[in-house]
Length: 425
View (tube, rainbow, N blue to C red):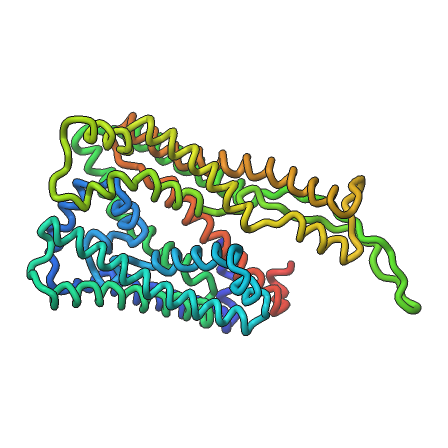
C-alpha cells in the first residue's frame, strides 16, 4: 500500500488528485467544527452519553464526533448512502428504473439526479427527526418556528454540501468520494479513542497487559479482514474455439471471480439499525421506562444483552443473503457466459450452469456472512467482559480496511492505464 502511494505520488496527475482529495478532507473536518445556531452542545453530548446504544451512537461514530457536537456536517454522508441504497433496491423492483439503469450513460445520469433529490428529501426528514429529539431533551436554546427552520435547513445544507464534495472527489480526486468521507470521519475518532484507553488505564479498568492484548487483537482482526476482503472463489470458464472468416477466436481459459464478502459493510449497517430501533424510539420519549415489562424489554436490546448479540448475529446473516440475492443474478450470469461462447467445464450450459453458480454463491455467501457476523460480534463480547465501549469497533474496522483497499486498487488501476513502468515491474 505504501509503495503504491509512493509510485502514484511520482505521477503529476495522480499527485494532483491526491492533493485535491486531501483538500476535500480538510474542508470536511472544518465543517465538522462549525456549530449549528440555537443548539447547546453540552446538552447534546449528555444526551448521547445516556443513549450510546441507540442509532445515534452509530451516527456519531460515522461522523467523527460531529453528530455529538451538532455541527454543520452532523448527519455526515449517511442520507446520501441511504438514498443510494434505496434507489439501488428500487431499481430491482421498478421496471422503469431498471430500464434507466441499462440505458447507458444517459440513464445513469438520470438515476444519479434522482438519487440526489432523494438525498435532499431524506436529509430534511433526518434533520427534522434530529431536531425533534434534541428539542425534547432541552438541547435547543431557543424555541419557535424560525430556530427550528434554521436548524433543519442547516443540517440539510450540510448533507447537500457533503454530497457535492463526494462527487468532486469522484470527478477530480482519486474516487470513492462517499467512502473517503466516511474514512476521514472514523479516523478522526482515533485520538479520542487513544485518550479513552489512557483514561481506562488511569482508573485501573485496564492494565498494560490488557492494552497490549487489545492492540494485538486489533491487528489480528485487521489482518483477518484484509484476507477475507481480498478472498474470492474463482469458477473456471472455458471458451470454445470459433472461426470467423479466416480467423479463429476463443479457445482460451478464464474464470468467474466471486468475492467472499460481496456485500461489504451494508448488512452490518442494516442489522445495527434494526436492533437499535427500540432504544432509538425510546430516545424520542421524554420519560424512559425504568420498571415493568417495557424496561425489561429495552434491557434485552441493550448492547450488553445476549439477546442483542444473538439477534444482531442472525440479522447480519439474513441481510447478507438478501443483498446478494438482489445484486447477483445467476441466470443472467449464465446467459452472458453462453452468449460469449463460454462454459464451465463439466457443467452443461443453460439452467445447470445457473444452478451451479447459485449453489457456489450460496456457500460463499454463508462464509462471508459468518465473517461479518463474527467481526461485528467480537467487540460486543469484549465490551461485556471489559466494560469498555467497543460496540461499533467491528464496523469501523470493516469500513477502514475496505476503503483503504479500494482506494489502493483505484490508484493501481489509474497507474496501469498510464503504463507506469515502475508499477508494472
